[in-house]
Structures are given as C-alpha cells and as structure tokens.
Image 1 (tube, rainbow, N blue to C red):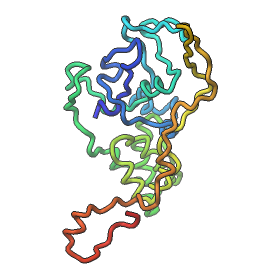
Image 2: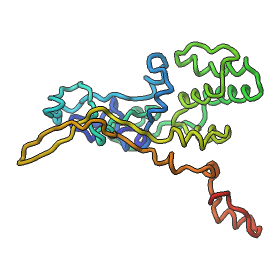
Image 3: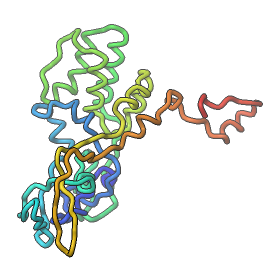
Image 4: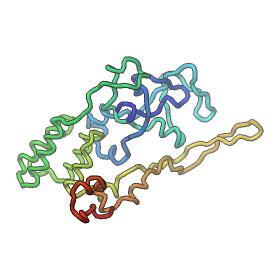
Length: 264
C-alpha cells in the first residue's frame, strides 16, 4: 500500500529514496485537483497532515545544474516543469506511509495496518442517516465530529446539507476504499465519475529542450497540458453502477436464462 500511493520522486536528478520523501515508491494512485479543491488549505489540518505536495532535493551527488532552472542546493524545492516531472512529484496521500515496519526506506514490504473501518466513517454514516430521516440536530452533531476535529468552525443544526456530507466524506475518507460504496448507495456514482474522475491540469509555461550540433537550447511551451487523464469521464455508463455477474455464478444458479446485469 505505501508503494502504490508514493510518487516516483527518486526518478528526478538530485533525489534519492528516504523516509521524508515517501520511501520506496511505485506511484499508481494520486489525489486529483478536485479533491484538493474541497479542503480549506489554510485551515483544514487534513490537507497538511494527509498529503505531501513538496519535495526537497536530498542527493548531493546528482543535483541538477540546468541553465533554465539554475543550479540547485540540498534542501531546495523540486519544481516540476514537464509532464514527466509532474507525475514523478505528483502530490501524494501519506495515510499509508510507513517508516516503522519498513526498517529501511528502500524496503518494499510493509506490515503497517490497513484501514478497514474507523470511527470517522461511523460518524459520517450517522450524519448521512440522520439527514435522510430529517433529524437536523443529530446530522450536525455527527458531521461536526470530523469537521471540527480538522480545525474548522462547527456547523449549526439545520445547516448541514447532503452536498456538505458528500464533500466531507471525500475529505475525511479519501483513499480508504469507501467512496465507491458511498456514492453508489446515494445514487451519485455515475454523476460524480462523469464530472470529477481523473485529472486535467494545464501549466502556463514549461520548458523543453532542443539540441542541435550538440548545443542544447531550452525554449518555453505556453499552456502545455501537464496531465489529461480524464478518459473515464467519457467512458463511464449508467450501467457501471453494477458490476457484471461472473458466468460461473450464473451457472451455479441453475435456472435457465438467469439474467446478467444490464449492459454486460
């Protein structure tokens, strides 16, 4: 789990694997800009404690000496200027980082507990349930359990809406395996995937290198798309809210023409 969520920062010049940077990385699952937009980044403590957004150069042997970006020193901030670099230092979730059971930062195995269920999910289920039955006091009580703990001002009774619970669920339980079930049971899965899945990012100016006669020239590329990983938004269909039934399970039912879920 720690490897999957850690950005591949060590692929960059001037970087080597260490605990502070995320230990050994694979870089597979990342937060997107939509998730980050839900946090008050100046107040909500979860943004600072659950995500890593900055990497500092830590390898004196391979510090870059690029003419555009300038020579770097240990402790300088690594700034991405291309798509490849951006993915290598993509903001990451640190919930699964493990510097205790991983006795060296290069170790790939981890024995840290995996999050299965915790009280924060119970609180948000309580807020969701009480909102559905119209109990405003209990809705606000359970909503505020996670909201206030994260450094935000308590929401008064009668002010909590379903959209607020949807956003707080994302802020609190991101990457814990709950979102799909939450969105499905509230009839929101298709709509939310259609609007927010994947990531689209554009940067005003990045630089690319053109080499001729062994002379490298760096030139600006304005409005370059850093990442467009939004194909899922176009491909999702309404029937995807249910999974296909394996043929072996259909056969076990023993009934002729036992129906497959719609769309499969």
